[in-house]
Image (cartoon, rainbow, N blue to C red; front, top):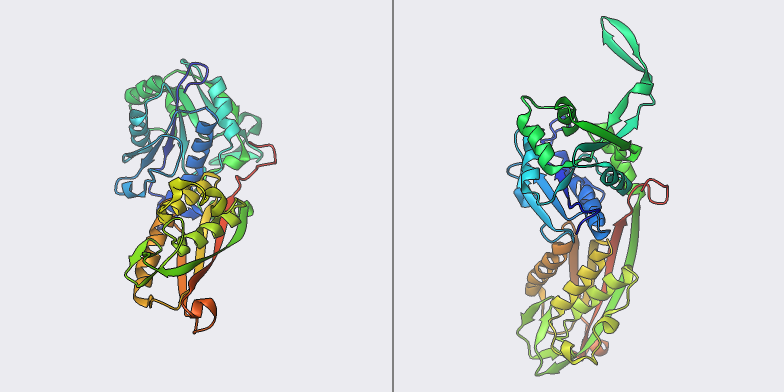
Length: 393
């Protein structure tokens, strides 16, 4: 993919230690339902879907490589380790990239409007870098003995991403005798031409506790919550295997169905689809299709999870109640919960899953061991990017 003959990488610098805020490095703190760095990665994913960039390169601190999420994005993604200083981390990210041009973005700016990236890409050339600038609305003073006024009309705040021809910014970094606050400073110091595009107040940097509280408020303001219900029933018959939550259970009776009849997976899948406003599994995987005969319901649930994840839904939690007279399942619940939690967390790392087993108490079709029934409830969340509908994208 290319744009106006240029190929583009999005280099996300998430290699800082976040010492000013204390505790866990800030890029890994949960902001809404995501770690902070992932907000910017989602923008890269959107840019790739729009045909604007070719790849995402994430730069993590040494020792945090395990935080990578290889399957989380549709944009081709690679990870590399940062250095002791920002310039070294940026260089490592650029070295890992494969495109002709690069946008270098700070993970501490999670609310990047995509329109800034488009402006940068339209402005940058092989000889000219480009940065987003934001005018200052505060009255400014310089203090050094006396207090003097600085005309604020001439003062602009620099944001990221900053865009350059990759080989050119690498040459500037290599030739620089000392570090700088950002790549634009090195570029200017080297006598290179720098252009600017309008920045956005939404693209602020999270540095201290007040910034963090502001970011949390913004993230939560864009939160959508949906709840879905799922239900399934299968007849118990001899000569069929019994599979619940992907676990094969030794039993005299098994569940009758076109697939493996994993009633727990089916109810969970329908709860998720209902919360996302999608059609049910009977429509997605009709029994009339031979290819679904004997299907592994964990694989069907995986397909459902991929569908809702592709529409930016995040699983908050799923709770299920399985009604079964036989067999006794108390010693199997731990493995069933483990199986389904592991599968759901493949797509949503912070999701929770729980299940309760209830006896039929000898009453009705469940109590007579004629069938099993399962009910499930799922909570999904979606975080709308701050500013959508307000003209900043």
